[in-house]
Image 1: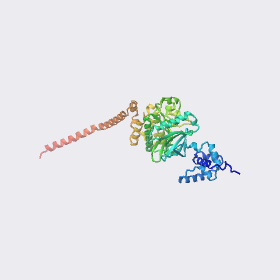
Image 2 (image 1 turned 90 degrees about the horizontal axis):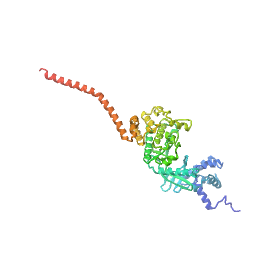
Image 3 (image 1 turned 30 degrees about the vertical axis):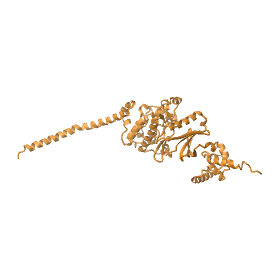
Length: 434
């Protein structure tokens, strides 16, 4: 009796299947196998441990292939899983990149850790969700994110590397950053010390300056999008909502839409204004800083709508961060209140002004722009930061002059008394008889 071609596939087909099983992504594999009752979690863990040993020996066999070799699964079961998941190895291959593991999933795509083969570099690959890849609008938005990212090149921004489409998969390759986010720290119940928080926010402000200089706004600054690297660096990530400030057509297409994250969104974004600018990012960065140093968000509510309403409502005041955490300096409180002014005309006009005040705080000085808010904002409206600095410096010089002047009359009186005493002594000595 001739052997069944199903149970014993020809050598060429077996080789093809083996290659497919080896390079198949393992993101949903474990859950799929367990759901079908084909293996136990313990069996999967043993195979994963063996796979890890092989990897250390530069053996690239995948988990599915190892499970077949260990007789945990039959080859036919493995092939049926491949078909059921609809993700064959061929479809998942991106020329020039080796997919290694899943890093996370967002609203638009899944991010994978991969190796850029040509230069042997670890990168992150974001792939548009299959369901969204059927919609031209989402494909356009995904491509737009890659193009915007390509306009930026800064130490405090996750940099773009490549983008394209293969076998129906739209992908975007970016710098791989090892570390954790601000959100990870906050989720552990930890609060940042003032100096550390200021250093981190200063780095993000410098990233915003770089973007602002290129006509871009991020529109989704929040703890989850700020990565703290293992080497002490700071990286701003996720440009999925970023857009060009001057793109009026794009802005009009989103008119009336509240785009952003409720806890950190600016009032103008809540209202769906079309003329959103860099001051919206400054507001969101202020909300992020508030959360970092107090351990709580600026405004809380039972629903997202309730939270967003409080960002806009002028009758709902912001509790100053230094009132929540009394260990904070009043200077930091003033800076955060200026960043989060509900009326954007009362905020820092651009990242340069914010950076200036953050550096003042880090040097142990009072914020010069926010500290002179009443007088300075009128000057800021005229767009001259040098004038603000000059006015602030002059104010301090006047204070010093007043201090000296208040003591001037005392000094003169003492000098006069001393002079009179000297003259009297001279006269007495010259007129004294021998």
